[in-house]
Length: 241
Image (cartoon, rainbow, N blue to C red; front, side, top):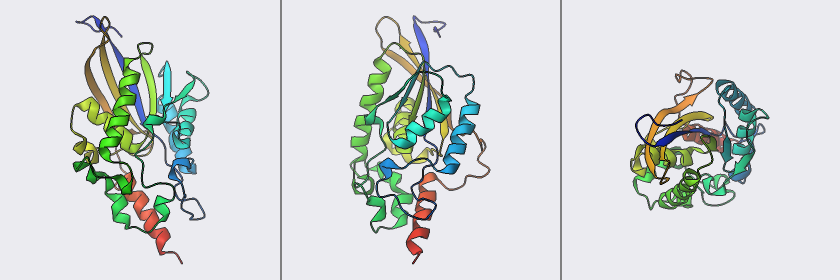
């Protein structure tokens, strides 16, 4: 869409978090590598609900991180149509302390409130990647996508931590705000980007929606954050004989 008072155009990103993933399977087993988990049965329902909500949106580009839970979410939302799904590994979730990190002993509270550590950008997420490192790679990937001129309407499917970094970038706030922006499973954020046609310069960003969930838009059923939910599940599993 052309801007009304400037020689530029407005583009839009529909930024999703992947739907609920099976970090703990139905048998109560903890995933040894959280990078590889698929969606849960409930997650597939969430993705189908979001597909219905987004019915009529005409994407000319679709991008995900490439991890299975984002690929599966994007595939369900696209309903077999739209552009070919692209994978950008730099948009993978904040990296914890390696494969099996969640299976090693730790306090569930560490997971529940891990994003509060973003107050210190040099702090490391569960002993892995620092928040400064996360921001650097996500900003680099987003800058590259924004610099490419041949799209107007992008579906972008990422992760809770990554989405918070992107929203902080769009809002022009420090990374320490990340913990204050919840990203429920399969939530939708809408970000508009104004780009100068001649120079390619980004003129402004406008955030239109944050953390909208198709099945529960006003959060009647959601009181715990996603990380709190995962921590509770892990605590319950750790108590089993």
